[in-house]
Length: 66
Image (tube, rainbow, N blue to C red):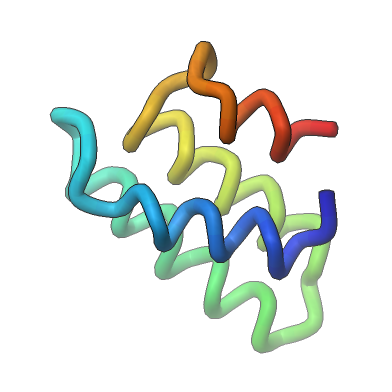
């Protein structure tokens, strides 16, 4: 999945789960990295955000890693 779509999924799930502050930090990092053109790193941080918000077993996370 493209980085911008992973970031959109991460934004969609902010506020879910018990580790919201970690999810927000990862998404903030992803936005800064994306703005600097570090697309691969941005995608990784957006995936980290998804891990914190919905977990690795969630369908959206599984879609995002492909």
